[in-house]
Image (cartoon, rainbow, N blue to C red; front, side, top):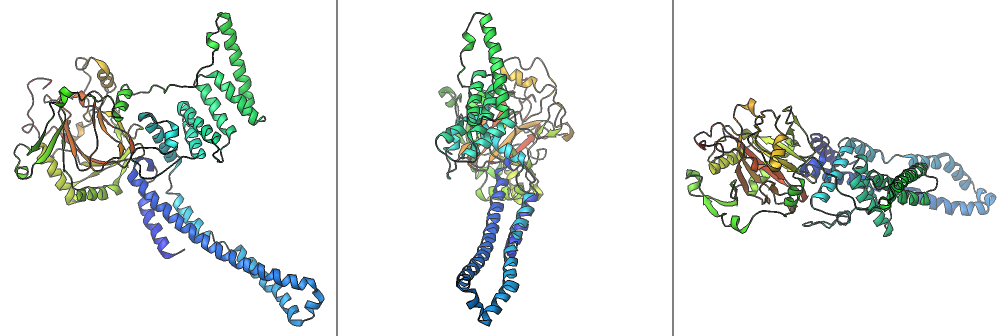
Length: 555
């Protein structure tokens, strides 16, 4: 292979080697795969050129030999009567044909195979493929997209056309099936049948689809349809062993059901169910509210509340650095007070911070509420890194700017966290502050009590830091997002949409030091786009005179 190809491979290995698996959790890291694949294509094309050159030589030799043997075979004795022809025949069979054999046996694929074999260790894994499939299903559920819409790539804000083939849709359904998710298995297998019925070709057969689909609908409790689909499967493949056994089993269950119904003198239960299945209820109590807000529905920004929201120039309590160049401040919510600041970071600063952060990105973790141990979780799909002021002057500059804007000290704040969201990247509803030991008198109604109870055994996550709880959150949006990716507050009914260069700020704690449970918030799944954010969590210590305590528990 060419020297520049090898050099490029080494460069990409250095990048990919830091990533390991979990590509699906960061679009920023997935871009590396684009370049790796481009390099493989170049390597493959070079292999094809070598193969074509070899085949051209073989073809030329074959044409030459065909013409010669046609002439010699017509009059063998006459042809060999010429001593030169006799010599050349012996020479060809002793030297030239073995040389041709060596040419044919040359392994011109060795270079390409070597490149591919080395790069394969940095390829996405089964975990990545499963994570990517789950991401599409998450988007499907959150934004109420049917499989046909996703299959046709009809998503808002997209620049490129992308469709899912029959085999792609089958892969989606099989991934759901392998996870025991029969609801999505049915949706995607039905989409496969729809595309096959429309005449689309693929390696997937109807028999394969019906095999998965029949068992999935059975698991969802639809015995009649499971029986019908199994009969269709056997009509296509009468020798299918599992289908034959399933058919007998389903018929037996149906007969038992019929006898039970008849003994109760009712036929009501014998009616075939409609093939519409409900999405299973999951662990998140405010799931419906959260996803509605992500779609821009159910926002409680009433005209009365909107009248209390204003725009102004903000000088940070007459901070000298902001007197000459104050920041534009806009109210996003009145109570609790959530504000947005404009032009907080320049494009150059954003690109520099992304450049520094990208090599350090690692799967974002959450703190287990019972053990206090950091762990990855399916409800937080992103990669993050932590930047120190010594990493680059731009980090120190941004930190000082956040201090000036908020009037809070960054001396006890956490490092600047930079996060990049992956496919369907999200962070489901959570609190930024650490919940203290349960007090039955604090929250007594609605889903706030339910969510609080989930954390009643939580360890004091920040005790070892000695800086107190997270008093406030400053969230920088470092990219626009074409669709999805809002920051929502389910208890408030508030939704805040990313705007590059802006930042939102809110207090997590009341002035009494108690947590403000209204600030439970979430990062909605990114539907289309690449979402980058950075945030600074300010802690209680050092803020005593900058944000004095209130006189009551609810101040």
